[in-house]
Every structure is written in structure tokens, then in C-alpha cells.
Length: 101
Image (cartoon, rainbow, N blue to C red; front, side):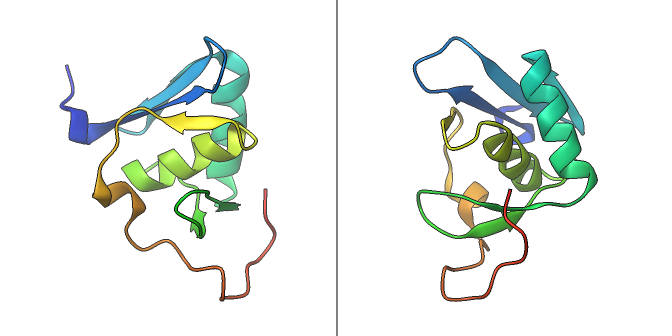
């Protein structure tokens, strides 16, 4: 079993659907997995609220996977494993974003 620092899970608020990432692999609700994989494949820039800012989705890092899964959740995602490392380095609102998904 992977350690918590090697995984991240996003749950949809008010629903039982969730998507998780561990070691480069997304698992969980099929629709969320597909959407997260698509966002990660194109390194989509996703707005993340809170704490506010933008990040790049990818499938190779814990933060990138979290961003991909939050993008797949369309603003309804809740990060289950919470720690400061996940939020470090998000680009601020004052910087010009690229396309937002």
C-alpha cells in the first residue's frame, strides 16, 4: 500500500463519486478518471480554489494529479488528503493564465 504522501484523492462534494491518484495511475469513478487523464495529457492549466491560483495538470506528480482531478470535478472537488505541499507553487491570480479548464 502506498504512503499517504504518495497518493491524493478528490471527492465530489455531496456525492459518493471520487477519483484518486497513486504512482502515476488514476483510479475511481470512470468519468472522473477519464476527465483527469485528458487534462493531464494536455498539461491543462486549471484554476484551483481555494487557496486561489492556477496550476498545471499532469499525471507524474502528486500536485499535478490533484490539479487534474480538481479540473475533472468542475469546481465541485474536495481534496481528501490535505497538506501544504499540495498547494505550494500555484500561480497567483495576478499572473495571466493560459486556457482554463
